[in-house]
Amino acid sequence: MVPIVEPDVSNQGNHDLETCQKVTETVLAAVYKALNDNHVFLEGTLLKPNFVTPGLQGPKATVQEVGDATITAFRRNVPMAVPGIFFLSGGLGEELSSLYLNAVNKSKGNSTWRLSYSYGRALTGSAWKAYGKNKDVKGCQTEFLKKAQDNFKASHGNLN
Image (cartoon, rainbow, N blue to C red):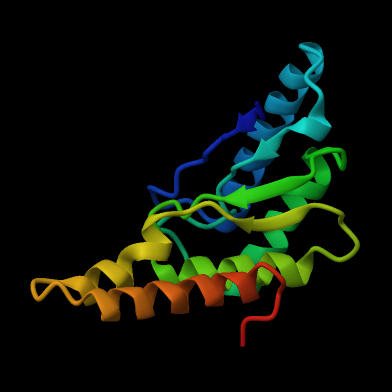
């Protein structure tokens, strides 16, 4: 069994990027203190966090600003012993989730974490839309494969 740590800071509201980063850092610090206090073997855990984003009704931030803020929050609070970070989409759209994943991978520098995705809606939305009322299985498969390929590239910082 692998403990999956899933702290999720909501993107609902009108907060700015800096507020989300501060709250995310506070949550991550508390989570990892509790894990440490309980002698959890961090090398055997996975983290499933939110991206650090402004609130949906808040001021906008660029994709790169989100990537930088997210990595900064992790560098300050996620032990290097944690092998992998797998993002939740937080209800973000498919394209934006992929762009954020790409940005965090470009910003991670020499951090050793494996940064990838663990989102369903941001992976399957286009596939379900293609399937539609006509039950287009081939179109569904094509869209799903395209999103999987996009997210594979994004998980390596290579999405164009």
